[in-house]
Amino acid sequence: MITVKKVLNNNVIIAEHSQYDEIVLIGKGLGFGKKTGDEVAGQKAEKFFVLKDAQEQQQYINLLEYVDESFIEMMNDFIGKIEERFQTSLNEHIHVGLTDHLYFAIKRIKQGMDVKNPFGRETELAYPKEYAMATEIVEALNDKLNMKIPTGEIGFIALHIHSALSNRALNEINKHTMLVTELVNMIEDNLKITIDKQDMNYLRLVRHLHHTIDRVTSGNYMEEQDALKKVLQEEYPICYTLSWKLMRVMQQKLQKPVPDAESVYLTLHIQRLYNKI
Image 1 (cartoon, rainbow, N blue to C red):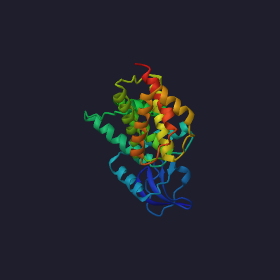
Image 2 (spheres, rainbow, N blue to C red; image 1 turned 180 degrees about the vertical axis):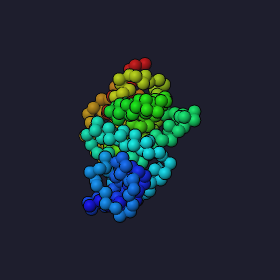
Image 3 (cartoon, helix red, strand yellow; image 1 turned 90 degrees about the vertical axis):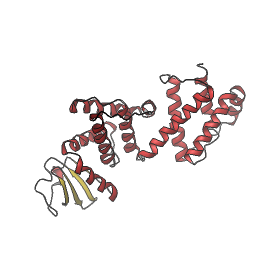
Image 4 (spheres, one colour; image 1 turned 45 degrees about the vertical axis):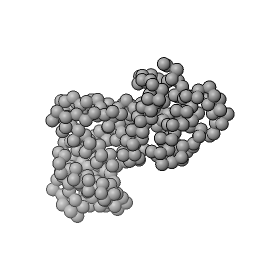
């Protein structure tokens, strides 16, 4: 049995569920005329999700106080399409995080303000599927709202999608993206080069750095490569030394040990870029 706990608006209610405890139910007209304690037919709901964390539930309630129902409905459609595309359930926090982000982003854009995204290209390279989905969302918003959303927003949306897919906090993903950019800048500064961001070797480097950070964070280390490490140290001393500098920065920022084997793979990636000069 599902009973109404609180009506948030005509289309959204918080309900008591025998299996999930409290759930958020979404459906056109679902909350109309309902009051606390009323039974509600779950099959009439177009979507339901669980916000177990009391703070997240309160954030969603606060969200509905300033975001109009048509925007909430549009965002729920987008979230449904993301789940359909990736064939998986998303972390439910996306209902709060992405809706809040896009509502205020659109408000800023209409007021003539624009927040630059310095990590757009790195985000596209690291999470291409999420970036493609975010591009479709921006195109749909442009069409529905008759406006032009800056391309920088695509990267922000992609990070929200990746956060919901991976069940990782958005601030953690942002920190890792910033770390990758810092490491790339270190390579350019140390080698006195400007990396072509369209170069396939740059794509490989960025993806490798993200994978390295993920491995270090999860403790899933790679096998040692002692023989190859000695060869690279002799053949490419500049790139090998730089790889260790990058590893020290990663270790400092992540507060976790970076295995020696990473020096081999980083040296090879750096050398490919160094060969371009």
